[in-house]
Length: 599
Image 1 (tube, helix red, strand yellow):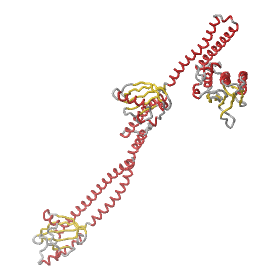
Image 2 (image 1 turned 135 degrees about the vertical axis):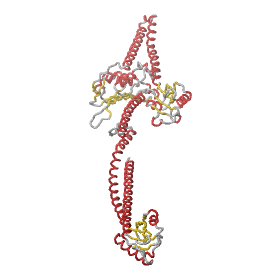
Image 3 (image 1 turned 90 degrees about the vertical axis):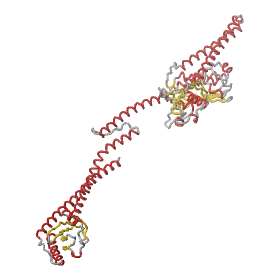
């Protein structure tokens, strides 16, 4: 815009300069022409006067003629301050105030003489070698027969005229300089006033192109520039409203995409990936920044998905299938490939929708296994009760010893059935979050001591040594009954699966203690020297009814739900539980729980 302002200023200055120079030239020429015309008139009058006062006569000889006219030429030169020349009709110069007429050329063809011979008046301007100046020559015809027939010519130097013109040019030049300077200032001011609002509008337009839709012009008025500024402001208002709406819609769409449980990938008609969401990144182990704009076939997306997309791109039909992928981890995906159209006629590409069915299938499997396990677990004691009851009814009741033994078995199986039903109901309530937790401060040293004492007799029967280490003055916010249930379950398992003469160790200590002695988490660790758990079974030990050794577990009186209940109770305390085990060496359960419960 600065260059435009400069160009506009130069254009205005140039126009003014051309106008002034043209006017100056016209004035100078007019001055010169008027001055010369005035001189011509004056010289013409002088020559007419000379014609009237000169004593014309017929000289006796040529020499006398030269002398007579030369003397008069010089006298007239003194009075008129002009060069006076007498020329005869044949062009012979017979008298001149500056030169010897005898030596002068024939003047018949001189411009002023030739013009006078035709129009009774002639003039011309030319450079005189005699005086080395520009001269104005004026001639008129004189007819005084028989004394003189020819021309009188006056010549006057134009030095005065040239000096006047030069002086005029000097004044014009000074005036022109001052005028151009003033014109420059005025032109710059005019250009500035014209370009300033345009510059402002240009800056606003650039800000709008950089998505700053709050930019507005400050122009006012009803002229074209004011109307342009108002139009730009109206355009910016409209763009701001539209972009706000677009951003809101985009944010809504982005929020929906990011929080969808289904993975989404959109591929255009050229096979390039144009859209992915967070779930798709998680499912396929990809990054949006890396794959957007990339050909689908060049990405790390599983080959089966690529084939389905290519088939839909070619046939433009809907495809649905369940696929198992193995990267970044094994998953079962419900895949839908949907053709997408911008309009009824405009083809956009395909939309790849992926739903992770792994957990659903796992839950279905777990439900089936749960039903089967519950049926099996319920069927076993019921079958035992039924079988021994029928035996008693068939006459075994009359044998006191056998009857007592059978009744003991029926009682034990009933107790086991009661525990199983109780554990199932309790686990169901915990999973449904229908068990309210009453959080209160728990003093860990006395709590752990009381809990361990509840199982010391059972450990003593197997000669198992229980050692306990608890940090002094340690508190935790928890539901004391549920926390005791967690510790009792783990401690009971440790005792049950540890051979006679083994050891069980339980510790409770704070984690990440700072310089002030404060801490946010507590770790409870229960380890034993029991039979251990095979590595392949570790990921599943918290599942309901899962048993590493079914015969051994049933013999220990367990229902197969203890560890599942422990896991849910730890989760409800916002804690974590981990297990480490080596077959034949022992098992260690580690629980980490926050000191304070949030919410």
